[in-house]
Image (cartoon, rainbow, N blue to C red; front, side):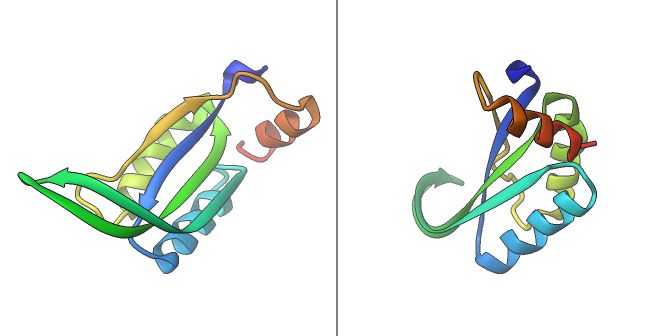
Length: 106
């Protein structure tokens, strides 16, 4: 069912970090798939100053049931003090793909 699936957004400082984190999450079956988008520009406030940094964006596909374990592992692997970890619900999706996602997140 779609409400049982989430896409987690997480920025990383560089491609190497993203590849390492993505591979570990998939190998440990915390996520079925991780997409890495290069060349994201982030503008944000940190420690009282507005900053602008080049980052990469991870799109992590998993089940809602795996969220807590995935978020804990992501915090342990991530180089940032406060990593972006946002879970967006999947409202609809191809049933075959959602079955695959569920099977590969176990």
